[in-house]
Length: 393
Image (cartoon, rainbow, N blue to C red; front, side, top):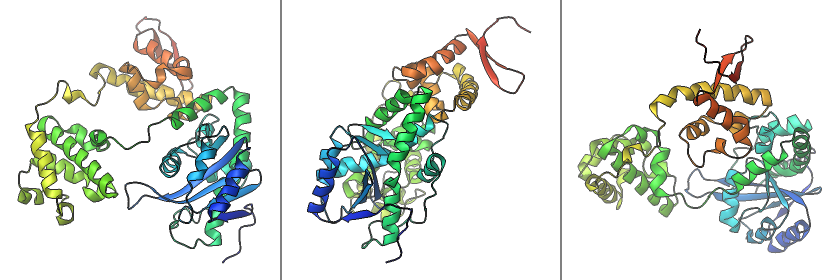
């Protein structure tokens, strides 16, 4: 074992059911706790949990899920305490798979930092910016499933949660001072409430951008093959790209193969992709899609924006980017290009049409596209939204 990092609080490695029960008992009355996970999913469809780090008061526990069932942590996750995580989305997925639940209250420090002028900061950047602490980065890409974990790995893992509660307290105070705490809490709740169940195979094609350029039978085939790939990946617990590359899906859609020999001629396909029942299943998906008549408006399933409004997106995006700088709010939180397009399409669930974003961003954009307002340079290189005069130059 190497020498441990003196900047990291002492931590306990939990490898027994009794040890985990001690941790759960200690956490039961805490108002807040920090949690992080280490996992791998490079070779699997579902993430493989390798370590759970928990911090409270001046304590840090590293729970080894390869040695102990971490299901008892569900009692804490389901409790009233605030769970503090950084960039929590994937951790929530992992916790839900391992414990069957996610925290009832979430504070994501990366999300919160976006409301005080930081744009998607890494945990190391957040520690340095908020606390003036520099943390080691050397084990970020370590093999967390290998055993035993050495002291350097354990120190690194402990560092991920060691100071999160301090960051939580400081960010909360700054958000309160700026009048934005509820904005951040609402955003954390939206993140917490996202559906993390099994991905719908029928939506898998949307993650292959080249499919959006296809039309007619080619698009239907691509959608069917992408759905088959998703189901196959989940059933065999392997990454979708190992089942079939994106390039092969597009090639199959364009060539409409009817035989295994024709399949072999598709770019991106080789024998490993056609083993066992796979070739027959791909051909069946192609045949079924080829025989399926198009549904009404199928060609517009991507909900494309009306052509006459497309020029407005770039103009509005420039203004939103400037507004985010002026307000010191991360642009991704204030309004993305997709958010702008959803608002212009008048989608019922458009983020810019609801909550604090509606007043700050959504209503000004509506007035702009309805001709009630105009954007102009203020002479200093910045855009200014102002009432439209209607007077031509």
